Image (cartoon, rainbow over all chains, first blue to last red; front, side, top):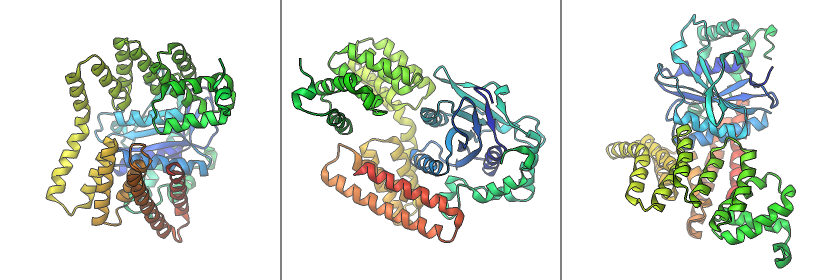
Length: 207
Length: 277
């Protein structure tokens, strides 16, 4: 992979999509993780869904960031980005809260990305991934060139997401907010991860 | 002229630790900071590791206080080189412009930060300081109020809800979150009280429990509180931590996949303990 390229794994994409779908009337957000070593390119291999309410209130966000940080150091992952889907589908621009959190992540990771989910493109049969990515350039968050964003096996990814919906497995997704409502729920989503990995074909190389 | 280390017979480690103490306790003894800091930077930079960046920041601000623009400039250059896109460094550059009374240039810098991050409190505070320095206090007050309005509105709505629904632990907890977000010592103490109240109404509200833990920890760690207040808040935080621990132990029992979240919480509580003591 070349400098400035970003690869988004099927696992990360699927969970983000599921998260946004689970709370269609709220804004949702989460963190993007990588299990690859730091380099010129960014490989987003997983994500952690965080909130679906009061995104701009500090305490729970701080708590979640701290816990994910700890978990990452235990599992050799790094936080490499942030995603958000706005409640208002027609507006996919980053909110001040999104910029603030992305800025914090950028302090620790100099090729961090900010990903906004484009609600208007989230319908079955849409040919284009419903995402808009920003990167840090000249002290601002600038739109990333679409050609530097890789979603390998896009068709397969779409089909996997559809399978999750048809089997009802999309309800397995737990975000940090839900975890706080019931702490027996696992925000690292081990169960759902396993299901998704099962569906990913061996040829994908996303193992 | 003899060095600090010679004059006071101290090692570079002692000098570094003194700087840290002054940082943590928010001392404004700028002349001392400049003396100690300048020698540390000039003679022992390579030994300081990553501490050097926060020392550059501390020394730079002290240098501005002492009209040592030469020193302030060189610290700023080092920070700019290491953190080229940082808002925090930009703010320092703004402070230097303020010291040189180049208020328009400073404001331009702060405005560019706010364009990127409209919630950047530090930049807003600097803009307000400039207004005060220029003797425009009523404008300063107006700017401050505008910024606070957003969260003050949220607080106001919740106050109404709490009055009409006194047994609803969720409103109490949310109010605590708004106060915590507004920040500042008074708001943190208020936040802690509302989290505690939410817990009285529902002792299983995890958000309130974490909120209590975090607000009490922050209050205890503040250099502005009395020893008694610090002691009380350490107690509250410790209580909350034990409750959190217990809740997670019970939740994690028998469920393999919960081990990760349980471990993460334990580590987090441990690490926060260290910073508080």
